[in-house]
Length: 169
Image (cartoon, rainbow, N blue to C red):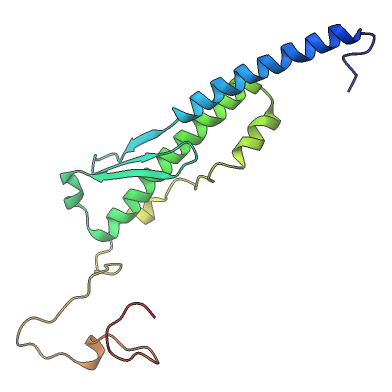
């Protein structure tokens, strides 16, 4: 890289450096404002889930509409994650576009990308499929009144479990 100050008198060189520093400060201020505004809100295709993420992709808010009750627990979790990932991709794209606009170099964009969450690939159709045998449910089926339970119906205790039911071990 060639020295841009070769043959320049010290006063001119100092004015040039101050001018460039002032321009970089303005760009940095604009970038900071744009990044603060890069908060993204995304809603699932059916409107059941709405999430808001920060410019870094951190989840800030999540809400569910009445349509969420139409989903089984085993499908609601993946729908939430798909919606979060879509918002994270949008936030990363906004931040990257701002960096590119103000600093222009791919090196600057690559540097900024390392601080953003990696966006996973689009979920496959297989993941969206509802299980038809009840697998994946977080709720255990209980026998109806009067029905006998067998040992296989009861949860097994771990070695060292004192039977108090404490989850903090």
